[in-house]
Image (cartoon, rainbow, N blue to C red; front, top):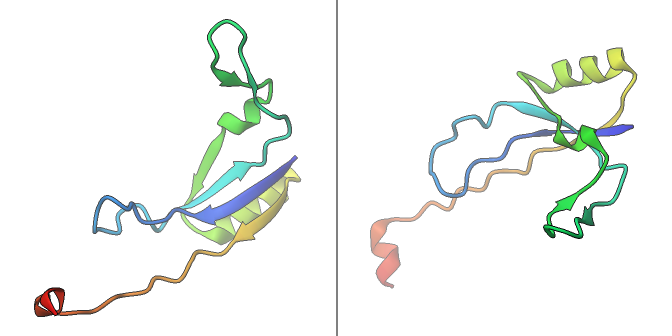
Length: 92
């Protein structure tokens, strides 16, 4: 049972940075998804894929994983690049 700890990224549809300070622990899938023959929906018997734990910091998420004996890896948050330009640059 392995898990991935990462920081939630900024929503692409909004300019604000709300909820980007949270850290999430998600379990890696242990079983492949298969299509249901009747409905065609994808599903599996792995119920841990449905679990998503939210923490205020990476250290809190790592401490939880250590306490519970969960193997984990931390995915670093991507660097935010600002593209500073003036409105007039749109018409060059």
